[in-house]
Length: 424
Ligand code: HEM
View 1 (spheres, helix red, strand yellow):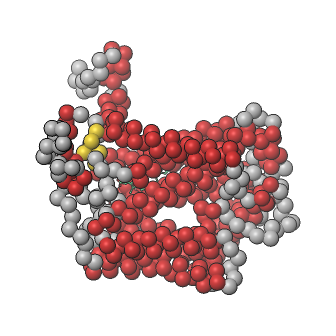
View 2 (cartoon, rainbow, N blue to C red):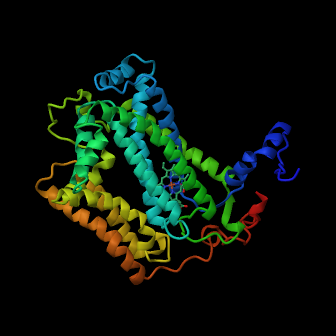
View 3 (cartoon, protein in one colour):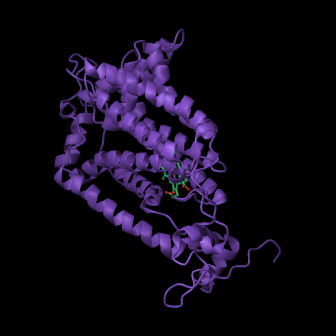
C-alpha cells in the first residue's frame, strides 16, 4: 500500500503495528544501531542519568500529590501525615526531596562536561540552548516545589525571591502582586505553585524530547571534540552504551539510596520543620544549595535591581556562549590555556556557592564580589580573547587513531582488526 512503512520486524503483531506507526523501527534507529563515538568516558552518562532522575521525580511526585493538600492551614500537616501515616510515605517524600538535589548534581555535572569538551559549539548550539531552557524550567519547578510543605523556609524563601521582581521600575510591584495572587505570599500563592509544580515537569519532558532530537541530528560530541570520520570511529549505541549507561545508573542509585536511607535531611534546612509563620522571620533565610551561587551573585551587587539583573544575566549569558567562545577547537584536552580557565571558573562557582551560604559580611563580601566579577569576565572577556590568542595542541587524525591500539585499521594483537565495526 502506498505510504505505508515496510517494517522488517519478524513478530507479526509488532510488524502490523510498526507498519502503521514505525515507532519500533525508530527506536532501533535512534537507540539500537545509532552510530555513537567509540571513545565516550563516564561523563557521557549524565544525560541518561538526568532522564532517570526525572522519571523517579515524576513517579514519586504523582504519588505524593495523592496525599498532599495545597491549602495553607493543611499543607504542613498533610506532609507530616505522609511521613507518618501513609504506607512508605516517608520513602516517597525523602526520595522526592533528595531527588531534587540529586537532579541538580547530575545536571550540573552534565553542564560542566559540556563546558570542558566544548559540546556547545557548532553544530550543537541549539542543543545547548535547549539545555539552558531545561535548566531554567528545573529551577522554577524546584523553587515552587520547595514552597509546598509550607514550612518557615518555604514561606520566607518564597517571600524573598518573589519580592525580587519588585526591583523592576514601574511594573515591579504589579508583577509581584500578580505572582502572589494577592498582597502577600498566601493561600492563592501556595495553590498556584502546586498547580505549576505539577505542570512544569511535563513541559520539561517536551523540551528534553527536543534536546535529544537535536542531539540525534548532530550526533554526540566526544572527549576528543573531533567529528567521527567513518564507521571505525563509532559504535552502535546498543549494546555498548546501553550497558555503560546501566552501570552508571546502578552506581547512581547506590549513592541516591545512601542519602535517602542514611542521611535524608543532609540537604534539608531544620527551619522547614517549623510551620510557616508570617509573623516570625527566621534568623537566616537560605535557599536550597543548588541556588546558592545565584543567590551569592544577587547579593554581591550593592543595588537591588543590579543584583536581580546580574543573577538572571548569569544564566542568560549561557544562551550566547556558543558565540562568545571563538576557538574552533572543542575539547579542553587540546586547549592548554582554556583548560586552566575552565578549572578557575568551576572554582569561582564553588566559591559563589559558599558565599551564598554565609552572611554577607567580612571576607564573604569580598569573595562574593571577586567571584561574581570573575564569572562574567570568564564568559564575556576571557573566552572571546582566548579563541584568538591561544595556540591549541595538534588534533588527532581521527577518533580511532587516537584511542585504538594499532591506530584503528591496523591489526590488533590476536589477529582482530579494529576497523570493520559494521560487523558488530
Ligand atoms: C533534565 C535535564 C537534561 C536531560 C534529561 C538531558 C539529556 C541529555 C541526554 C540524554 C544527552 C545525551 C547523552 C549525554 O551526552 O550525556 C544530552 C546531551 C547534551 N546535553 Fe543535556 N540534558 C539535560 C540538561 C541539559 C542542560 C541543562 C544542558 C546545558 C545547559 C545540556 C546540554 C547538553 C549538551 C551540550 C549535550 C551534547 C553533549 C555531547 O554530545 O557532548 N543538557 N542531554
